[in-house]
Image (tube, rainbow, N blue to C red; front, side, top):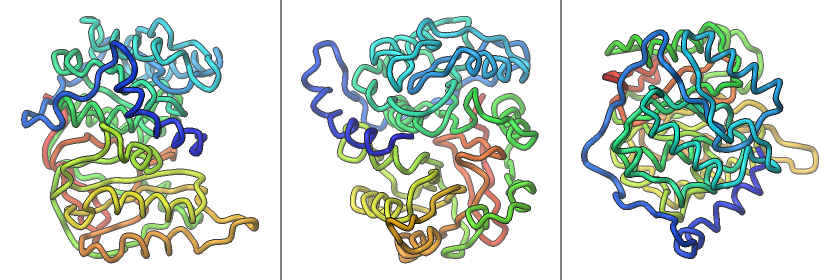
Length: 347
């Protein structure tokens, strides 16, 4: 993910929202009514879109096959197979496919084919009223965080931070995404993947920053995207009592420090119920830019909040990742490193 280009582009969002004719800005900052989408069943049709970066034809075909192997039929957005620089299409084309997927009555869920770059660029044109009137499962992660945050906060819709079409879909990832979307139960305990426990990399090592147990609605996603949204109409808001989950990949520790600092200064992190960090794989210093190890940065930036904080849960840019329903009540217990979903994310 080209983080610097992303942050630069996101900084122009407020200007775009007011200067562009026909573009919308959020009309309902945080609706009181939360909306749960209907669960999926075998054979349902899933709409595949690429609201950020695109894929080469062979990679796209493989991603379609992965979603279909889960037991679903697929319909592909008109522009999803496109390539437009680092994006799958123009901003208008990518927004078109998002709206098509929510409006098409045959489509039961909207699944992003990949993350990458570009999702924040289409936020000024998102029709939140359309989405609110046609609530559906919406799945993705990484750059898709921008859409998760904007859609949930402006529509009340529970969306799902989970694997994209090009993800590995390990047995662990497949089990959790299907359980959450098709066979939901509550409470639903999610433990760290045994495969992740077995890895020797320091980035997969679970560490309690501040011990404790807390409950609250889930919110969060990719750290780079959440900080890129700060100061825009789609930034995180009303965070009191929530469990914030964060993940990222290949960012040097000094940049993670900068982003966590920006987040601290843009939202009241002390009012959160807890912070759950995924696996920040590859976030290491270089010889050209030495800095403390990632875990030391995390301790320094989050260890004084006075709330439970844990690093190394099984979500993020990793093969064994679980699916997080944004907006539902959950419980985090640092003593067991278990996140428990206290309610289902679908009806």
